[in-house]
Image (tube, rainbow, N blue to C red; front, top):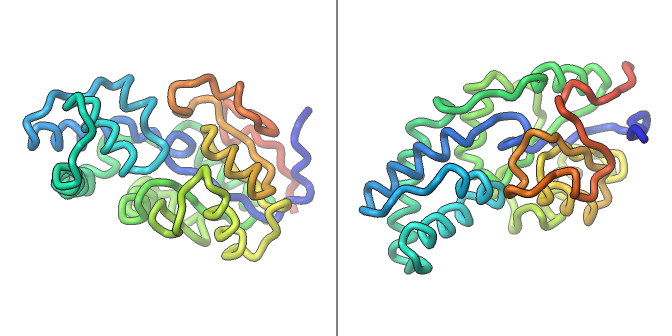
Length: 225
């Protein structure tokens, strides 16, 4: 049954795996970082199922995968510094906007919805990426994984974003690609729609508790106002 969107006032949109395919950026930055530390490279499939829970989680998991043991705090801090440097140097160069995203954002705005981007990616990575891909102008607010005390799947970032938008959670749609987005939305009281082409930690997204699924962002049925 299609989601009733007639009551919506705003939408919160995830970034990696929902709007932009950033797997290529992750692979390049991680490969350079692992080279700096003299560690073996991570496989693409491992990175794809590990992204989505924030860069710190990705980095710790990748270091453990490459070294065969959890990284020390000193190793993590050195790796984090190198990773940030490499990621910011190539941010967006190996990433592409998914088909239908720009059109979908236009439809959301044409329906009178205020938009916020909420990602677990650090804000210093997210803002330049949105700008580089021509998406920044759609959003009234952009929040990263370091904007609040906790990250998705905790509901706090969604509740704080709703406060910034000035809308009730029940009238604020969460658009994402993973269980992280859905769990946060359910706990916050937001309706949630997931795209089918994202990452979702290597698991089938259709198994996630969501209100609807989209093959393209511009397939969301919205009333024009």
